[in-house]
Figure 1 (cartoon, rainbow, N blue to C red):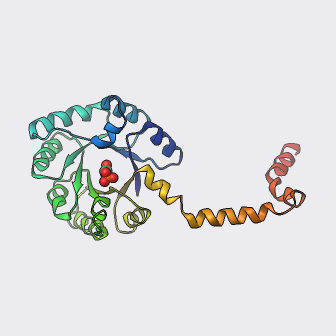
Figure 2: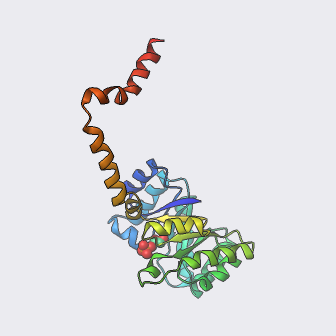
Figure 3: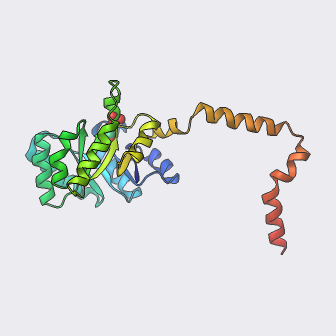
Length: 234
Ligand code: G3P
């Protein structure tokens, strides 16, 4: 299971890399535009700090221009993967890129049917947009399972990427329901580790502990230090 970070922010990538949560990065035109600088420079900088796949999306809508843009983006760094929309135009483009050995991440997949031809042609990734469906009160967890089973059925090398993740439960669903990778926006990792029950319990334990007189706590708290002193003396 790979964890990608869904952001174009260098600060966030560096921060989450320290936590071991950046096996790759996914961007889109909206995420790149938020950074407010030359998007190509931004992608180059990301590529300098991340060795796993970095998804960058084409912004043209004409197939020929999309192919040309994809070729250029693929040359920006050797680990770039080109995001191509899951449409008929995208199919034309992805097939041509496949012939040229350029890796694609098929994006904006809202229903498994969109993914079928791309799985058959062996696109590198299929990005199933989970959260944008959930925004309408619909549960598309089932689609994770269905797309994975189509990949297995067709013995395709395509990897399923659970994308557009909004809440911690979808991280768990991505793992248990068969996605090969999940791309998490930093705000969602924050939600995972900002659980009010956790915060309250941690506070409660430490508050009780701090009620002990310092001399009683001392041995327990300085145990690592004592061991270091003993080791240095031996
Ligand atoms: O990889 C998907 C992502 O780039 C877009 O997701 O959060 O805008 O629905 P979101």
